[in-house]
Length: 74
Image 1 (cartoon, rainbow, N blue to C red):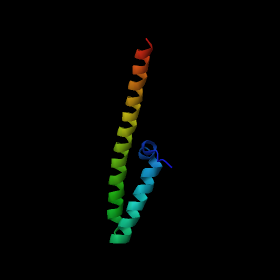
Image 2: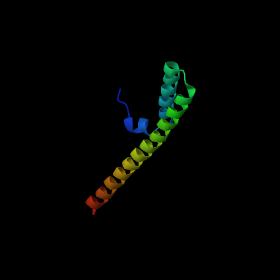
Image 3: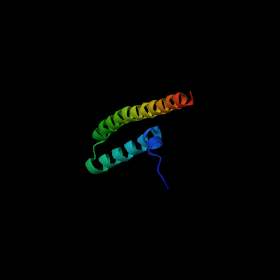
Image 4: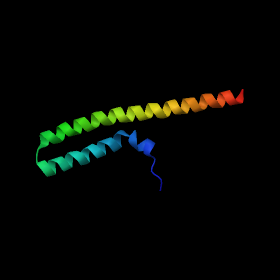
């Protein structure tokens, strides 16, 4: 089974699951909900930037490929 990392890394559901796991572990280890909330917010902020950047990169790569194919046809 091959994992589609492009789809996973741009999925909000996946990032929420990761954030939930990290938050839960922080609460279990430290017992401090405030730290868990802060780290969760930081992870979701970073995840938004990563997902946006990857999605735009994949879209740009697809557009370049389409433009090259149009040039080859002419």
